[in-house]
Image 1: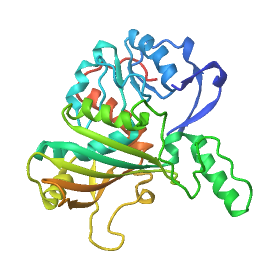
Image 2: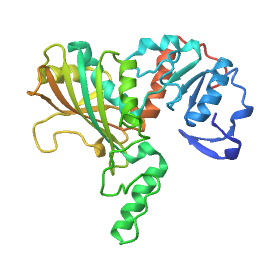
Image 3: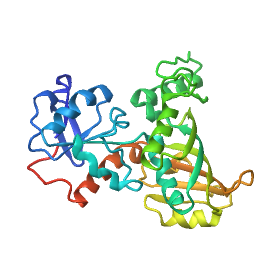
Length: 312
């Protein structure tokens, strides 16, 4: 069942090989629905997720509205599946920020092996992270550059075509942006509260796929070869790391794929027990839709929900 506000009532949307007609959220009865995938933004989720959860339906929310609530589990199934057990407190489960999700898929197995002390991450985030408006702006500006038309910045604070913008979300009092703060807070909640994290988040002129340059400092020794072997066996990870031209993954290759790709694995000689990684993933999949579906699959696999009549 596809649900939205009354403005979208009757609109047709595709779902696999089917076409669904949108129904009104405010009149829908969730009492016989098992799972609701909420992708309507933070304000809608704040209002409706508790109401839906009170009817016995579990909400898996893609917004940031519930990520930092102590009574709501924040889940990446490859990272902290056991944390899902507290979902009954509110019947809400939060999906993490796209840049955090792919980061922690790669970090979790390394943390289990050698215990990460500090993370320094710089992101190269695609415009699809800002939604359809972001993708449209990159396309429109790129075309304008080639035909010598005026270039207008509407969605982003500066021109994004043939440029990079070190600013995602609002600025905070300490000088970081909220996107950077999210990566810090979510890493601590899902992986380990003792890990020190610093992030710089940058918007780049790429349509789909977030990339991350990551520097790690561990408590215990770990070599690049050991890290490769660990990551090759880790769920959700795919290592492409050859010391040759093109022996690494870029956003073009990851678009439309489910895996989190890791390349450029090498030791950092400037610190004790240090590694550098290059991590790339489709932000619309592992960073959003795929992770939400994996959370639902995790609930079913663990017998945490009792099937009812239909799904929302």
